[in-house]
Length: 76
Figure 1 (cartoon, rainbow, N blue to C red):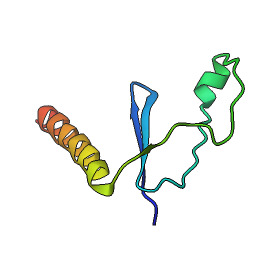
Figure 2 (cartoon, rainbow, N blue to C red):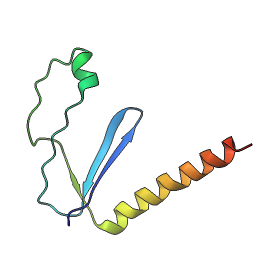
Figure 3 (cartoon, rainbow, N blue to C red):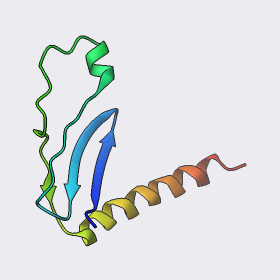
């Protein structure tokens, strides 16, 4: 099974990671289109960083830590 991680921050894709090199990604962002995007979308042309599952898990773990911190701060 191929694992893909898409990192979005501030409403923007910051990175796409995969544990296999045989992946093509196409990004279609309707917010940009509705906002007047002029560049045509190129199919299968989004950059993908090849990495291993351990590095991808670290990204997920860090995100979960941020969620835990935010949840702790908002608890009564």
